[in-house]
Length: 245
Image (tube, rainbow, N blue to C red; front, side, top):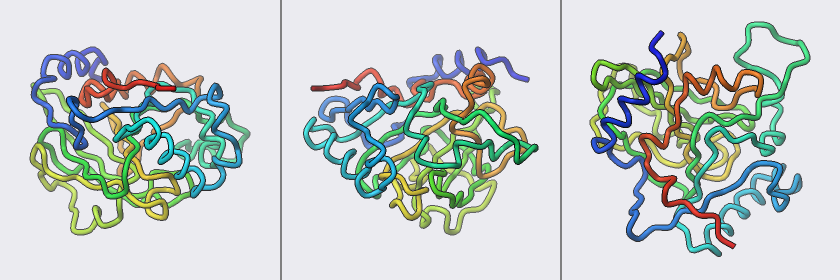
């Protein structure tokens, strides 16, 4: 298996090549760093269990802070996943029915914003797979691209998109750098979340198609982080994020 530092070093080396993944202008747009850990006591169960209230919560955060997007979440131990039983069992495990450690560690970066915000391919690649993961709390409409950079093969995953983005897709279809991959989907198409993008880098898809864990058990954190390096190596947005009063 390719060592983690190989991909990381390649992404760092080629960072100037990447197209923006969302229409963010560092000179004009502001980013709000959103905390989804247990430290965020404002995010109550009443909000988490009601998608409408959750959406209002995100919208209000961005409005009062004058931010175009909310962002964050990589390697974050999140209380927010208590809202769905999807994260209390391991749907990816072969053995079912046993009492399991819940999945709480986030493996991607979330970008929260307006419904139908376009999402772009950061570099050229082919459609590896796609699916409608239609469970409460799941990815909803999902697209995975495969890329090769300096002979290093890796994947980018785009979750919580719109169903219209899956129409007419085919595995193996080439997508050019800067081409629209999809759009922030509505809750009934994105797994019942406020509109946002889950962006994740995956080295080895391990025969999975249309899906890959975006959240893992804490006991498996090191294993999954090795296979899913920090997406901000491509996004290069976290340097602009601030948590404002």
